[in-house]
Amino acid sequence: MHSGAGERQLATVDGGDWRAVDAAVRERFDGDGPALYLGTGEHPELVAASTAAVIETSGSTGIPKRVVLSEAALRASADATAHALGGPGQWLLCLPAHYVAGLQVLVRSHLAGLPVEWVEPGFDAEAFAAASARLTEERRYVSLVPAQLARLVEAGEQSEAVRAAVARFDALLTGGQAMPAALADRARALGYAVVRSYGSSETATGCIYDGYPVGATRTRLVDGVLEIASPTLADGYLDAPELTDAAFRVEGGTRWYRTGDRARIHADGRVEVLGRADNVIVSGGINVALDRVETAVREVPGFEGAVVVGVPSEKWGHVPVVVVGGALAGALADDQGAGDVLASIRRLVRESIGVAAQPERITAIERMPLLASGKPDRRAVTRLVASGD
Image 1 (cartoon, rainbow, N blue to C red):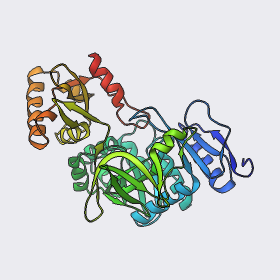
Image 2 (image 1 turned 180 degrees about the vertical axis):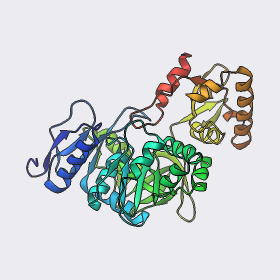
Image 3 (image 1 turned 90 degrees about the vertical axis):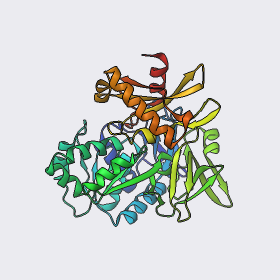
Image 4 (image 1 turned 90 degrees about the horizontal axis):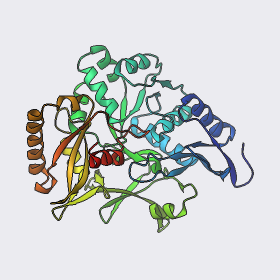
């Protein structure tokens, strides 16, 4: 319920129940209901009247933050997406509703006046195909993370039914983390309409598609770090004015968000994201961007889900280590086989990036720690590797 001039109630919504989030979105956008709190722990009772949702970030690059998104920002993002993809369509929800990309599936669906369909937890290709059969509209969209796309590619290469179901979508927005070029190529070879999406909770989800800003989004580089101006920008962080001031600033009447990602902006406006500015180690006196090493490693067949972290080294200061989990971990149990693979990866990285970037070893763990968003929990992975567990 609206609480008076300038203020609105902030109500906790169970982010694990997408139907509850969907109902809360509709009440907020149509009935002037409370803002959605999609996080954990205590929170203020009241927020600014313009607030539509507060999302707790995954904490993949530091402590979790609570991002404040206005109704105007969510609407601007939904409008930009519809325009960029060729018009409104029906969405299939495959991501948690408390994740910004999942929330935006519900917002886009509501604003388009179309029902949303949902894939049961434990995402797999057969469930995806079955859910897609329930879509009734001509235009079909879905938001995925690269790991989900990889499952659809692997299944589509084996099953014509899965391939046909996925190829029926007008766009598979894929973001949340870097996607190997080889995976995108395999997907497109199957007829999948993959669109690489770049954005964050602070930009109300993706605002750059296939390298190009969408809607009214603008980009620039400041000291090599990407900054974004857009009507989709968050208002800031809940009860954290210092964090807000560090990430958002106004210059010449334009509000910019400092992403923390290194990037290049090409002459035609295409943005090439190079990785986190803070995900860098010094190895033998040379700066090594771990995201760049990880991108190279993920081009090796079977290593699409590998994670590269930095660990201390008495000799070099820090060194890159490749971490794998699941089935690949079992396949590397053979010491000789693992040695051959490591030598191949070191050669690839040495030739493409440089000697200092060569991974020191491959570490296999039974299960890759994940954040609630489905991304690898790099801090937990680093701790596991450093401890030797």
